[in-house]
Length: 206
Image: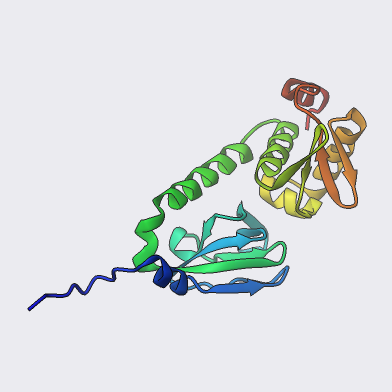
């Protein structure tokens, strides 16, 4: 008599059946489940919490291939907000061990963003954040890099722990200096070999 294991052994087909897809609209909140991690298949989200006075604190920005969900955070409250139309798949707990690379990537991106948030002056903090966004959500257009998600000045301020007024002022200065362009609510970064980080810091003391 052949013994059988209680541990699930899944073929490629049965795994794909488990990873059921769900679609959420822009600004919709993805529900939290203690036993589930979501994998983003399409779109962009931000994870956030808020202080007692209601101030939002952005924890991260996430796109295709990233893993998100309450099992990856001990922050309370914790919320996942869709920045675009988003398609996600469910990764149940017994499959988490199959995506160690995705879990490592989540940790690395969180630490990278945390390091940016503590940079000084704020001009450098903002520039590094825009470069980070362009790496994650950008595309090349001729010699420039377009950040392909809409992000408001207030949302940037929430990430970088500053005010909307400061972000607006710095973006205007960056535009005047030629390090970025704005077109139809998109931010376009110029090539880094034309404008260095030192130039950003030198010309902006905020």
